[in-house]
Length: 448
Image (cartoon, rainbow, N blue to C red):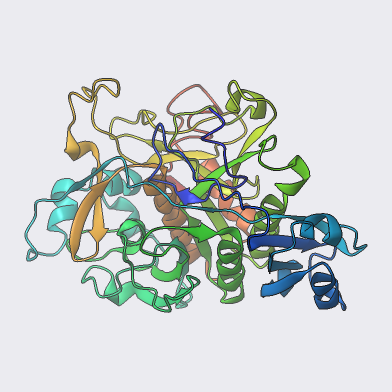
């Protein structure tokens, strides 16, 4: 990894949109210009009594409060804001908040299908990935297997992404609600296609099918039309989803934290990471199973030193909490997709994310076969994509159907994670390995 790829302390990008050579945008601010900061207080559950006065005294103005996470988003033109606010005895960390523009998905293709068609026809002919997880739909015949809970309660998967096309015929009946955390865009309607594709992998029920066709999906939109997202907005979305009592959250997003970025002192780049971790732990403590994608840079993310390449210091994939379920991407032939990140201790399971077939040469770009990509819903129709972003939602859906089988709020996130891991098919090295984790997810095994 070159330093230009690690330029931002937390590169928040759509998981399917950075494949081999994506370069995050550095949010370095000029002296005297207004900058955005995250301030993390020592109390994780609430803000201190005089936090507003402390922020104002250091020359900052509060833009957003994340009171249940003990954090605030601040804007300031004071070049010494960080050094001054860190003098407060109530402050644990403070740092620059970064924003990144994700690249266009590197592996995607238009689906050449008509708008009209019989129910499940595209599933039957093209959705190898959903068939792989469900054993050709066999899991739908088991209790809870479609996502319809045994206790009659809706099982909701929160999709923290670009929004969802809630008018799509395959999704509208399973769309629970939507909330937007994008300034200036109050509607959760997807203007990108990524979130709608993710939602279709989870709960489509029409020409295409999701792993759990009776699950409900809720949109927590954090990316606007151009894709940028700030850490505080994603943390707020995750916190809100937990407060809304969703059962599962899918985060097909992520980035890298380079802790020796020359643009900033190391101590100024860790606040984003702490905020992410607090938000994840908040959700898990409230009973939410959190699923995340491993990233699409074909990197071994197990070694912070190696991940930095010829740069100094440590680099970490984030979010990468061990409390989450972290998912790598496999192909139709049950192989590790050529773009998927991997690493011992960093991958829990593998799920179908698609690739370009056994004859594809990533070096020359020859031998491409789009039928090995993953077909799912996009605004106004259907599309092919591939990425760990496509693998994670299938795992999130599996978590949802497991919960549906046991009833809402009856399993802890750690129990759900254990069931997913212990029921996975061992496909590479015997036992755990860094490419597939505990194995390829299997809905039939999990429900049995």
